[in-house]
Length: 50
Image (tube, rainbow, N blue to C red):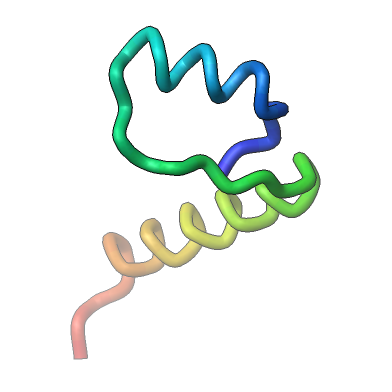
């Protein structure tokens, strides 16, 4: 997922020969997803296993 436009992601794909698609999302939504992943990851590391 990316908040970059097609021109930017296309250049990145061409430069690094990437063979997958980028999906566009709003920057705010992307930041929310990253925060949730981080939160869940750190909770997993710090909370005792049951």
